[in-house]
Length: 117
Image (tube, rainbow, N blue to C red; front, side):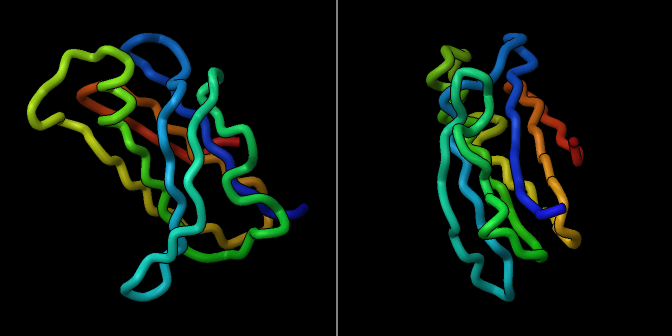
């Protein structure tokens, strides 16, 4: 099996997919993370393409940065100054050539993630 990376963002406070949430992917090597790409979630809370497709997959340490504050502002969540959750970085390792799925369950005051399938 060949490796690739996907995500799915659900807004648990509103009970729907988080559409329009910006996600940046970085590869972590040493002190300076390398920005690989930035994508935005669609109406299903997923990206239109794999975040890291098979032809770009390599084992290593990566970080997904979810721009939750911008999404919460755009979705009409009452504003705070500053927002409790603004940018959510999730750092993880990919060691085998398989499907890595890193979902985010999001609300204005909490989030969770796991390795999905």
